[in-house]
Length: 127
Image (cartoon, rainbow, N blue to C red; front, side):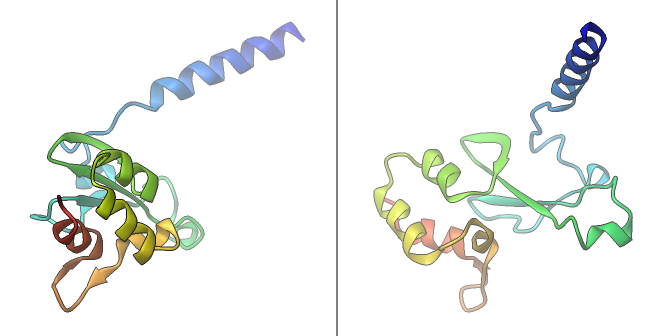
């Protein structure tokens, strides 16, 4: 029982070390990150984990993150995180809820305005 506890502690420690903050400077293409909307206010990063084989890539879809001018640390692209990023902008919060039912929809592109929808919504709901 003691040996199992030591192994678990070692695994937990090594896992936590691997979970460093990713910033816009370290989110490079060689690390599997791509900025999908350069020049927009909310920069969206697509990450394909390089450890999966092309065959497994279908099972493990890309993950999406974002940064803003106020923080270069990548955060999960979720409605909750976007609301926290703009805490006083309640029209933006309401527009997110009105336009996106699921977090997976946050990567929607607006063909008419030629920009990602979250940026269009932010631009039109800024106090």
